[in-house]
Figure 1 (tube, rainbow, N blue to C red):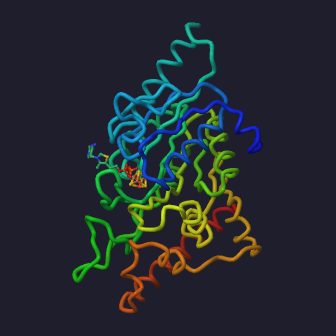
Figure 2: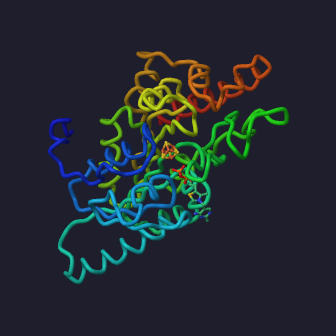
Figure 3: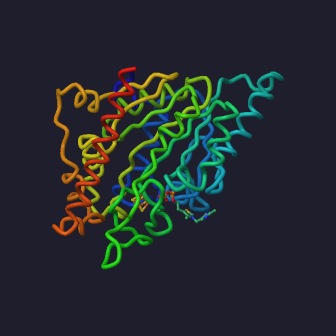
Length: 313
Ligand SMILES: Cc1ncc(C[n+]2csc(CCOP(=O)(O)OP(=O)(O)O)c2C)c(N)n1
Ligand code: SF4
């Protein structure tokens, strides 16, 4: 495993000077992923905060080949690139061993881009798809997505007298992707860079499609102090809202802090710690919403128990 010192000596693939908000986790996640391979990479980037903020014409923060892709088809874009690469390699026109990566928000992964993602995985393209999961459509002003937590207030499910924020639980896209029986899928968090980079490295070398779902705190949409981004991603793991695990060639494995919690060596924090840390859940502090908070806790517990059961097989 690479050390921090060795990392600093690596070429910078995503530079500073982009226009993401202060405290945004997305460039942190991307830098960690790009450190996971020394091979030449081609990036396909779905529309979203990360795409528009790193490519404001006439500037670019990218030091690798990078393709803007539409919201719905970044996995289809990389499929085409990877197919062309395979042909050119076979014909001897490309000698390098290259890697292909998609960066997409949760809107572009869970919802609009899912069809292209599912198709690219089913066809067996060799690429790593990274979902930067900030649990909403942030770039267009914090609308709910299929990844938004139940009870969160967004601009399309605002908490008020009619509804207490989002009424549905998020879908479990990592398990949906794993159901494609691809070589590798995992969940990671930027606070644990070692775990994240190891998983990205496995994804790059999986020999087929790989998927990495990364919790990506957004100070603007989640309403917390921008200095707390990394703390926020850690808290997601400590509450088991965001367990760290991998699905590696059919085997489920819980990793890092989540493994320690599963083994009883670390505390599983109550979901209330998570809810009270962010303005998007502020309304849930009212005792009239205590049943909803209990429901969220019960859902976290149920999914956590299910993961422990899967990891024992
Ligand atoms: C088909 C389509 N619908 C809507 C849009 C407008 N749009 C651009 S970015 C965006 C939100 C992106 O959300 P997400 O993928 O979660 O990424 P984030 O900005 O949160 O990182 C939307 C709705 C679009 N570009 N294309
Ligand atoms: S709105 Fe959120 S995801 Fe978008 S750039 Fe700002 S902090 Fe990052």
